[in-house]
Length: 275
Length: 321
View: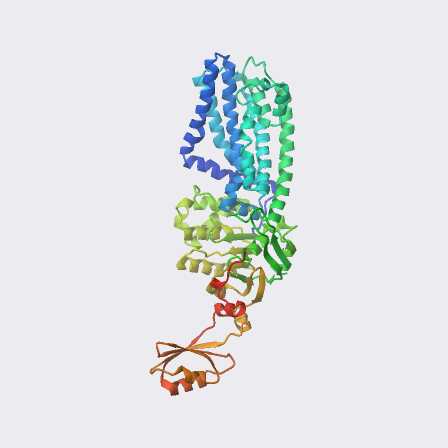
């Protein structure tokens, strides 16, 4: 056994950096991801911008799409590279090794989130750049400091959701993957990814706030786009709600991971790779 | 304190949609002293892997208690995980895009090893298993044998007090398997360490293990040193005898101490004696019959003991449903 065992925080940070490493390094060693993860998704964003252009909508609507395109990248990352990732890790035998090590699952998932957000941030940056340079979206450049703050808090809440969903995988295995992937389209709708969420009506918009992306995007649009008359709540309130959301969802994720790990050990779902 | 102790451990996998209920383990009582290589020997489906997963905190027993280094695997697993490590045969863990060195560093961090210490140990261990020149090779370019050596290094980085090896030489060629076994023996000499090894290679268990538990259909049939197991099984000495002329097996069969005689080409005999009975008289009788060219005593193998205990060879036993 190693002589000097690190404290919990140091060990946690070691785990985060170690688990983030393959994602960051892997992204650099497999350049094809730029085509699949950045270029192709850009086309969908371009298509929706063209719809607004054809309708001669105000330029800020194109801004909605651009910001939506950036944020959905993070949502997809949450779904596929956080929650559903556990299945791949299990099939490869990594999950066993994670669990048999003294590293906590929350730290490992945080590492996944950090590593995943590296490439996702590039995609988001590409979308924003496209909007600013090619489509001349009128971003309010003075709003970027607030935007970064909102983005960080939104991502904390979003990846917290990913961690909680990961625990579902431990419980329900492959069935969870189908369930989780079925959340994609409803989330795009309820979060107002490509349109102001108030257009859904107040009731649906409030329901949409159960998804952190809804509040995050609404806040981002307020600080980065001028003339937005469709805000759900004032952005500082949305930021406060997101902070509360992030804390609550992280606590839920921590609790759920513990419970689900125990249940998986009882049911034998961690080790029976082919069942 | 024992390295591993179990008290009536059982494991039942409940029926799920499309599957039957499976009793994987029943009333397992084992004591593994520290400093030993302890083998679990049995056919596929015997319950070996289930037991090792319980010890490595990945599975809970449905009955009984299991302790590793005195830690209860059910309630003290977080502390226990600092003291153990594991490797499975055919393991494909890790990330193909990483190099060997990067992969090992990543896992070392999960065990809280400082990067500087980890790098030093990685270099030392890669040297020992002969992987130094592959250290900067990406994982997906490694052969099965190299990958398994890397997995072994991964498991040793944290210098575990108890190492669980689940079929560690499965699928390896003879030379690599011999290297792995050789290194394990050397590693054991370095300190107070314990290895729990599951295998269905008889020779591997015979060569490596201080004690062996033969396990079948979820139950421990017997435990002992390889020699004890052979004795427990009532093993009898076997001789191969080459004679100049064609001996008459019927004459040997009439000879008291001889239990079985088989003919091979008319000039070779296989004779099995009870351990207590002498071989000198056998030589004299055979010599009288037809001049002895060679006389070889065959050492008893663990397989002989296994067959005597289970009634069948390891490969012949059907896996548990």
